Amino acid sequence: MADYLLGLDYGTGGAKACIINAEGEVLGFGFEEYRFFHEKPGWSEHDPHGYWEVACRLIRGVIDESNVDPGEIRGMGVSSALPSMVMVDEAGEPIHRAYNLMDRRATKEVEWLKETVGEERIRQLTANRLEDHPTIVNLLWEKNNRPGSFERIDKALTIGGFVALKLTGERVLSYSSAAFYGVAYDILNRRFDEDLLREIGIDPDIIPKLVDCEEVAGRVTPEAAAETGLAPGTPIALQVDFNASCIAAGVTEVGDIMSNLGTVGNFGVIHTDEEFLFSDVGLSMINFAFTIDSENVYITVPSTTTGGQSIRYLRDEFSKYEIEVERALGVSSYDLLNLEAKDVPPGSEGLIILPFLMGERTPIWDPYARGVIFGLSLNHTKGHLVRAMMEAVAYALYDSYRLLEEADLEIKAPIVLNEGGAVSDLWRQIITDVFNTPTVLLERRTGAPFGDAILGGVISGVFDDFSVAKDWAEYVAPMEPNAQNHERYQEYFEVFKQVYKHVKDDFRTLAELRDRT
Image 1 (cartoon, rainbow, N blue to C red):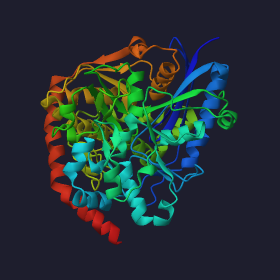
Image 2 (cartoon, rainbow, N blue to C red; image 1 turned 60 degrees about the horizontal axis):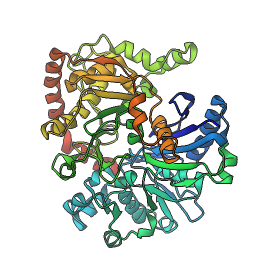
Image 3 (cartoon, rainbow, N blue to C red; image 1 turned 90 degrees about the vertical axis):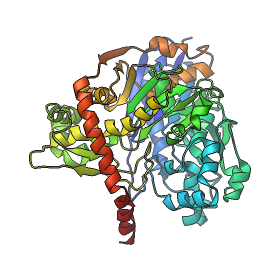
Image 4 (spheres, rainbow, N blue to C red; image 1 turned 120 degrees about the vertical axis):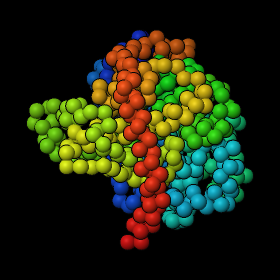
């Protein structure tokens, strides 16, 4: 009998699935976007029922495409973008829409926790900040604003945890994902501080059972098998989507660095430095356990909230012509936007954008921040806007990267660029020049579901360890930084920082004015 493995990943804007064989060949692949709901300022939601519907379609689709016997799928990994939250009742049914990581509604709860518990106490327990709106913060919002439905919550799950519930009947949370619950999660001792949970009015029973990423979290039920086409009993494991992307890219060792330009823009560095986690720089980033040896290995992930989503926004809202050309001729609308931007010089001829369309994460942690176009002139075209937005995302990520360099955290060049907007030669060169660091592109960009499939192979015994991840990773399109461009970008980066500094307080004033209308 043959050995096959399946991976399923939920990003912020869509889900992917793949089936591979034991040699790492991708036999089936599927992707499906899902709808965002932004019905109120700061809110960002999905329909949780859609997660399961997408899972069933994608799993059946890759099984059909690969033509494998479901009984020969030895294991499956599931990952999702975080923080996210799906509230379910005792029957496992969702209560309200699901939160995704762009949701920034719980600003009052953040302030209450700072005043009541103390920001330093929380940081020294979690090695993370409140401003990321982790799950427990959002639970407090639910308690304060929808107390009737809050009382119905049995478990607060991640997106991946909700899909695992539908697949296996188990209500579980991986150790790597637990850090995104925040507030009361003890990152070093891998447990929730139940006294602190009770102190802030959250019942510890609302937290799912903790499981290691490298253990079986559950097995596919007969009911789920009938809906997905999987074989009953197939083992499932859970991990954070960024970890899954790292494994897919062969980024598995201390010092390795990978960047994604998906809906969110981010990069991550693997390390074992517990002292760094609680340093000033470490506490300005996002920190969680890495999938491999999660008791001892961590990953620090700086993140800009709307990375690839910023270009998707320009396409969806201001590029109807390019979308129609894509429909009519099959030419990618993103490729068309790249063509418009490629001849614009570095610095976009004095056009700077703050890309904070839904608040910002590292290192400024400002939920009130919003997008700003600075320096717009009649000579600027759509191509200038596209390039300036690409440069803006690069500046936002570089703002964190320079801090890691100054903190002497071990970082091995080159940066491995993986998913989303990384397929753009222009965007990769901008990042290479802004960071002043060599980059490479992962040739096989199946992405996170490939890493999930490898995880499925480890938990099922098909693989002894994760070494195949590095063996299978092939890098192409190496880029070296252009010193002249870097120097130019450094000048623009300083203006980028100054613009934010000048309007920072105005963002909050604007939010207060908006909320009164």
